[in-house]
Image 1 (cartoon, rainbow, N blue to C red):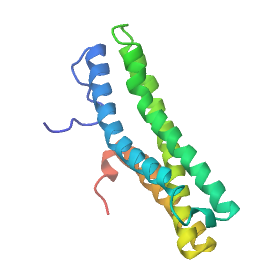
Image 2: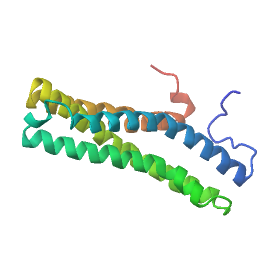
Image 3: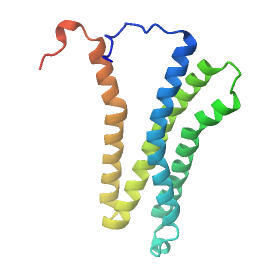
Image 4: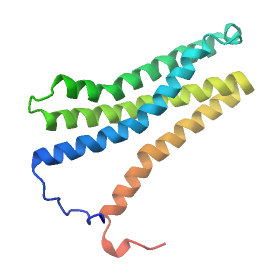
Length: 168
């Protein structure tokens, strides 16, 4: 089915819209949650690696902070399912969708920080502090660019006057 032009509403009831929005949100969370789980599992195993005792204080603080951020991201991304289960058949779907959407937005910020810390730590241990900070900064910039700036640019392009669309 082709996308409708911006501003064209679907013919659906508020509950149908809430059901559709929740299904779409859950699909997005499934994709994100897999990455969070892999990152969290990786971080959990690092403390048992033979080289872990040789980490300096900055690296250990980075590790613990990143581990906690990954745990927080996992908790935030699973919260919509728990919220839905707790409010199941309470006629709260629109509220569940609003709260879950906010949780997903917060979760992406936390995940950005967890990605940044993970890359910073691994590159710091592998190549040194300066390279680690550079790689962590690059990771943060890529995530902000793709997850925040790109959607903003696309949203602006969608509402731009028609006469400006398609120009290069």
